[in-house]
Length: 147
Image (cartoon, rainbow, N blue to C red):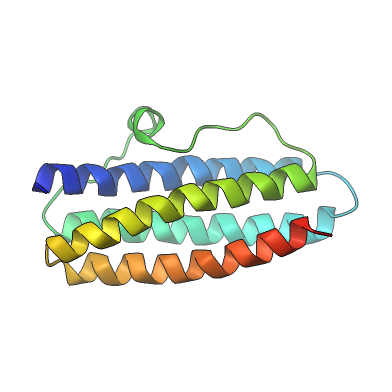
């Protein structure tokens, strides 16, 4: 695999997180119903963590000598996650998160394998940490949806 493809995949993951971040903000602002208090807090926790991951990804791209995407027009074109319409229902919001996390997880696993090929230990470590975190969260979201 060539370096251009590798960086393109890292930038696609960065873009996906940027769109996901904004979708999470929208969920936080617009949630209604009986689960409002718990979801309002959870959505805030998730968008705060997503913002940290965005920064880690951009700095990782920079640390390997490349340039991260930084314009929303680029994110919209590149992201595997699309902007949501406004979601007010808690179950619909949590289902969105689970679906988005599965998309992010797929991208992270692909980059994990590529980082081995590129002998890029820093990216490998970051992807490994993100995968473990997401697998645990996905179990929790699936459990919440079963209520």
